[in-house]
Length: 236
Image (cartoon, rainbow, N blue to C red; front, side, top):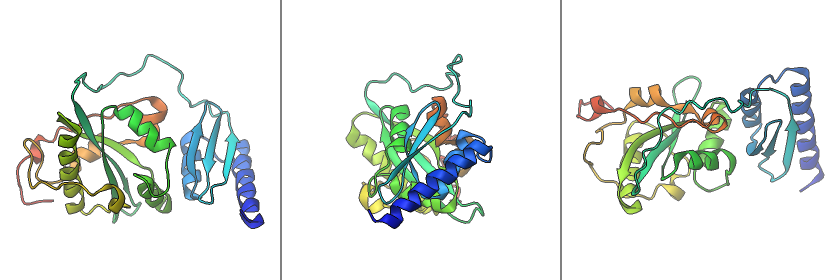
């Protein structure tokens, strides 16, 4: 790494730490927004520190006392993943530009959504999976949100059909799908039983939760109730 790159990351660390110490950065969520605006990805998230990685590969760490790393109060146990042995959740990570004109998403499947969401949030790797979506969100300076779309019973192979079906619904609805050439080579069935004809925009908007909140607070997003979107109304 050249000297200029090293000096840049040191200056960035210094400015972020100074903003934390002065109170300009006032919460963990605010810190994550600032980091994303500088093209940083999260590598570690502790109770009083956070680690980031720049696109050059150089890492930095800052410390804070935000007191917003929620204590282990009685957890709001909200909707839990049902204890079904055979099957996978189909989920989406989404981001919308501030002017509302552009939107992007990543589709995936997981037997354990909470674990998978943590992996997305903390283990982003260039050219893999949801990395392109996080870069898209960083450029737009917006948050990534998570939502559980549906449950696909049976094998992972069956879940792949559901994943591809929902990916097609998202693309039909105008979502960009960054790096889909790496992760989106999936079967695209024209229909699936009990699945919506179109992307259920209202239901996704109502149930999506900030990915940082999902991870930091140990929340499982509400599963969609898309009954109203099961039938072809002629609207995407």
